[in-house]
Image (cartoon, rainbow, N blue to C red; front, top):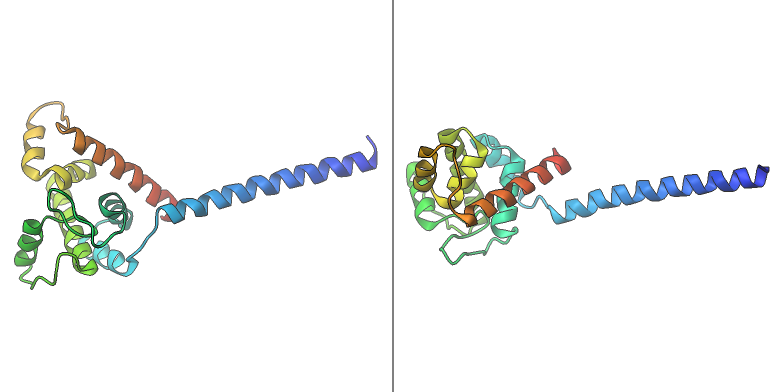
Length: 175
């Protein structure tokens, strides 16, 4: 092989390697754009305070509201973490704190994260905590009576699947 051909082969290999590297890095940053970490000052604070991993809080916000602080569901859930007004009021009363508004970003993250923490402490399992966050503790308690455990609501199964994908994405992209 001539020196010119060897040079062409080397240049081609280097070009391919650079293209592969750029596309891998580009894909990584594109995924980070799709899975943002907005409201990080509140997420970091309350994740630490209530012992909930940050990537779980981000995943719940991502799935529940897509980071839209004015989101509301047909069921009546509100804000970034889609808290039910009764749950929000109950949590504020438990902490003996005045309600500052369920749509307030910090307030919603604070009480949503607190609620996740409470659910995890109750069930000692994130999947069960996610089920309870979506379907309520009464339903999860009933489901646990049956062996093997089975999520009874297709909506809750779909929710848990989405949350678990988002948890994995946030963990792999940032932690």
